[in-house]
Image (cartoon, rainbow, N blue to C red; front, top):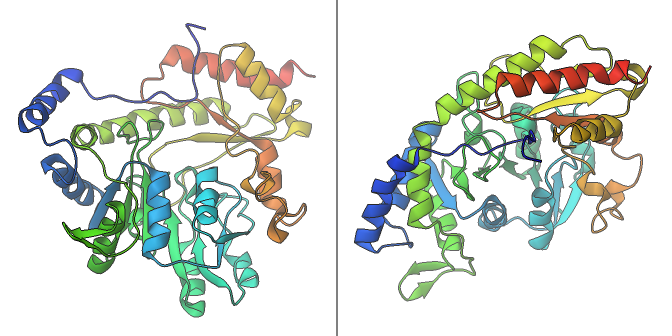
Length: 374
């Protein structure tokens, strides 16, 4: 379908500007292992994000796993079912047990008021997710973590550049993981990072990222290969020049949706949170089938039939996948808010180059959905 409108489209920097970086890499023949662009990229990221230390990884999944190991997380980890499955897989693959906690109905983030009742003697950490760029209620989560001596490790894949009351959200907790996947606001094709303000933790992370090597002959711990090559590091450096313009263009799309879909019966749009500088990575809507006149799934199929590809994100819940659905915290009825949201959520297309004509098609199709079913 040549004229299809996809749910997202990656932004690429000008190719002509990338070629000089490649020429330097070709000339140096230094392709990986902490090269000049790798070092420059980490420093530039820390400066842009307003954080102390950044360790870049080849992808966010490996960063999640390494972060858990760096924090020495064991036993049970309280987390959200309303997230991309990498969050839960990282817990499982580290030999820990995910304990699912319900979410807040407005932000879709982990509900701090429900965390405390799930803590057991085996609980060592809380792993919340900033969903769609909406920051979690950090101060409340931090109080719970501090009271019970738990690690607080954020999956911050959706909050690149997001700030709340001027504070970078990526600086919260003991550690935060960022994703630079191709679908994200800021991408390095594939990539991720861990953010911390602790220099000792930064050193431990960097050992774990490189097989556990401290120096040429010393391996301090079992590690992985999470290093980022020079090509993607250089690409990331160049991308940083354009990310603010990318976010501004995405905001234009979000503003268009709000102007033309606000007030459609049965559709709930997410508003910007007070005091939050958003990055507009996603545009989710909730579809109330009884009021809208069409189920979320019916609207999804109708859009697809018209060449518009939305996404039921996140559906199904992580707690409903075979590996996790028999856990006590995943049993039906234990997560009522998350279960309802997962049945109603639909993310509409949003990316920097989404033009007015395509936006008009999407808005018209969504607004017509109810009329066509009455």
